[in-house]
Length: 222
Image 1: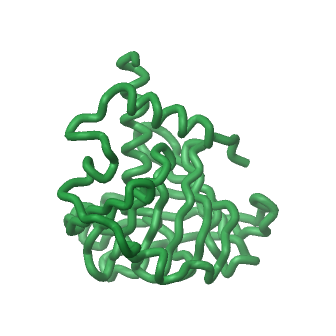
Image 2 (image 1 turned 90 degrees about the vertical axis):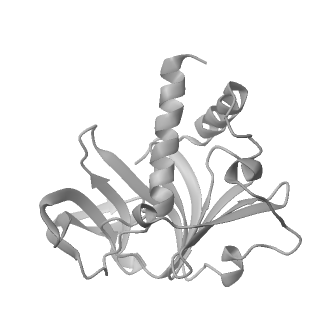
């Protein structure tokens, strides 16, 4: 694998990792749903129930990340090998919530539009922390009126360019408590590397496999 391709694989991993822990940086979606999250053309099945989030790894089949916000821990599952690992959520990894007292969220309606068949209100948004009022971030949000104002599409600016998140096959109220539990019969291991079966360093053959799996899932965003 070339260094350029490896760098792209690492970048994709960082993007996915960011949204594992920060799926709603500037919006307040319904409390219970399942959906397919689409980022950079990569489709990621996910579920949310209260402070719990479940995300299936887009590149490694059978790898699932569960974030338990109330318990402040993350669980990584390997559903093929029936293994799991859990670890505390670090302060810098905690989800940024619309409901945090320190968060200021401002939005202005700029029109209406249909996204993936859903009628939406379109908003310009700015969000920042009261403790850091000079660090403001801009976004555009499309809220689906037929899905209780679910933020079905979001675009936000970053120094490296625009990032877009879309949600497909949104099903409100479809998440179940069992989705966020470790199934019976799973063995607890000492590291995420053991769960993913990649050792302490990821080999190029494994990176090739991940990239191929991601490419198969890629579809044009609408």
